[in-house]
Length: 220
Image (tube, rainbow, N blue to C red; front, side, top):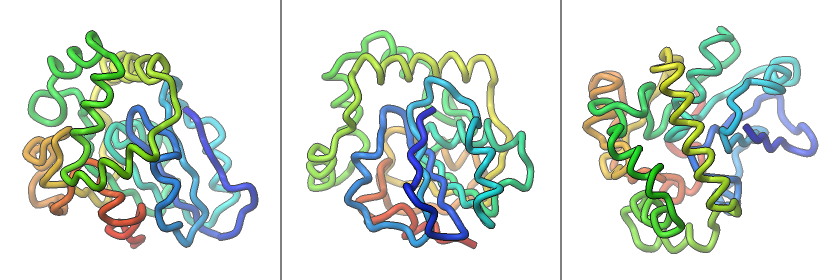
């Protein structure tokens, strides 16, 4: 797991963001900056809490926002360290991401894994958005990772989920996008329980709609 931290600590609180598969900080670089220090995590070829342990000595409060496959990664990591987080928000992901009823179908995941290409990756990016203007904005800020590197991450996430299975629920807020074409709103609502999640009219990648990571994920 790669971690990008601020050069200098500026706040007593931090926003810990766990991105989805295939990402890096580039697509998020022109969003409105959060008021707290931002720590950005991505590339889950190794899933280990590692240096994140030290955050509890640096910050009074740590607020987690996990998106897409980052939802499972975050729950897998932080269910082992109770009281580490002041708040935890899941955005368009579930605790069982490879699951016919509560995530992506195993067939669809395997198809992406077995038939991966730059064309398939661009097709996935297309599906993350419901507005062409936002897709074009993403195209101008595409992750700068090689297709081989992204494919390897997809493979490792598959292996890790099969090994560990569904994660424990650590989230006090769950946001489900009705326009999500990656993790369907139906499966997300089924996974969390319809009464336990907030359903909003956003696509899988909602951050350009919100113009930030926290417009709809305010700390509680």
